[in-house]
Structure formats: structure tokens, C-alpha cells
Length: 122
Image 1 (cartoon, rainbow, N blue to C red):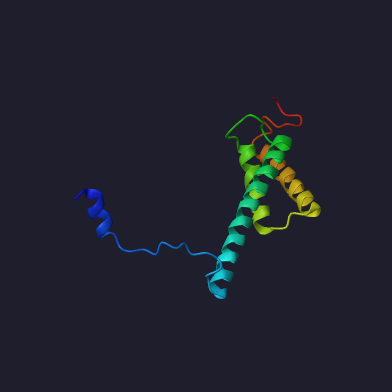
Image 2 (cartoon, one colour):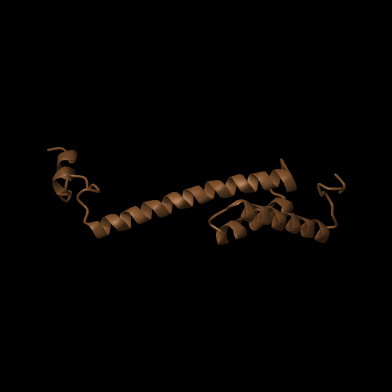
């Protein structure tokens, strides 16, 4: 007798038939579909947040600088705004851009305007 056969013999018996959506009862199927939808929505929101943040960093932030305060301000503004508003339409994106612009202006003012993209010392 080999180790493999002993391990196989001692392992608990598990049904070899995979559970499919057809064999689930309706309540369990609804929960599973809701979970799948929620996970898909999270992935979409995450991709959207990344794209919007990247574009706003390119417009208002420090491009090519991995960890800058200005980029962190933009990232935080995007996360806060998109976290509250799951449906980003044109008006919401315009408001987000205005809030990012104001946050970057406030950050530049608090830090003496050094390195600002508009008229700073670069």
C-alpha cells in the first residue's frame, strides 16, 4: 500500500457532482446571482475610479511622480465623490472635476503654491 492510497482512503467522501445553477433552489440561486452582480459592480466601479483618477491626475496633478501630495488629494476627492455617487453621469463628473480643481487649489495655497501646474515654480 502506498501513501497515496492511504490518504485517498482516509479522505472524507465528497460528492463528485459539481453544484450547478440548475440544481439550486430559487432562493439560493437569487442570493448567488445577487452576489455575482455585486462583485461585478465592484469591479466596474474600481476600473472606473482608476480611469477617472488617472485622467484628473494628468490634468491637475503631478504626472510621472508616484507619491505626491497633489495626486493624493485628487485620489481622495475621487474616492469620496465616487463612493457616494455610484451613477457617474456628465453632471456628476463635472461636479467631481470642479471639486478636484478646488481641492488642488486649496492644496497649492496651503503649501505655498510650490510646484503648481498653473503659474507655480516648476
